[in-house]
Length: 105
Image (cartoon, rainbow, N blue to C red; front, side, top):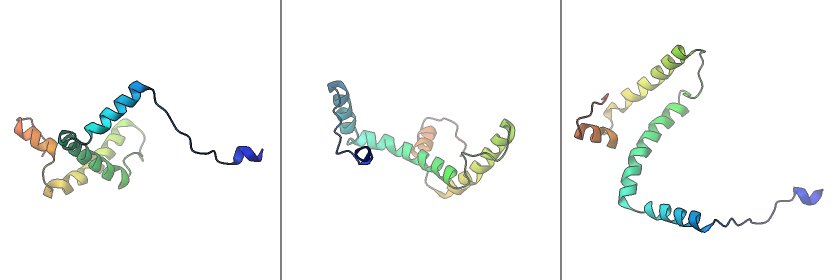
């Protein structure tokens, strides 16, 4: 029984060739300037969502029912959007402005 409790040695995972080729291609794409530029927009959005989740606890609702839960989410999001008014515009906002798409800001 004691031998079952001991940690195993290092386990190597060998992927089939198509998976290996796909992973290598995706990793190589991450070094291109185009990929980094596209990822900057995603990183900005994820930062905003992370602030809402970590700070006031957006994932948990203190209310039951869709209407009151929605109201809680709106009230949680409102201060974070007003706090971002002094920040520089995000890439998505710049693209929306460039292509004449209506934005909230």
